[in-house]
Length: 197
Image 1 (cartoon, rainbow, N blue to C red):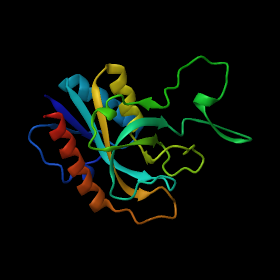
Image 2: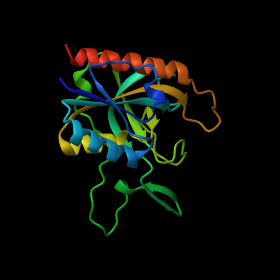
Image 3: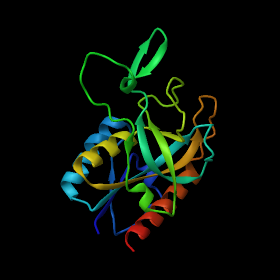
């Protein structure tokens, strides 16, 4: 089985060391991740592609710093417009243009792996923005929705593993990079081992 693991940054891959998977770095954000995901799939033709990274947790979630999850759904949370009455997501506002907004994007494979808790995520261009809808959402990252979108469109089996590094709050500065990155590597190893059974 050919497995590719995509990380936004080299730092997030610090403790993940395996010879039986290919590691690729996508860069931070939705646009570089879309390109890197497409290129990784085109160049390597993987059986499975995995995104691994850290994420923030919303205060309404029961998750805590250090927890590792599989993401089941990604929302393009800050895709929208501001009006006199505030921010409105593009997928929820009627207009005269005809287009599809895929939000959320669902990972149908997440429930196939019972060794992780699943979580719903917001993907953001603007992290910690207070105007986005967080109802029923656990975590926040900056790449997942584009990764989900490209993988879904190309029909490739995919997973997203995220470990909580911080609370999503502009006044909460105590990010735990070391624990979250170590736990991320542990989680990715568990997933790869499970897939190779």
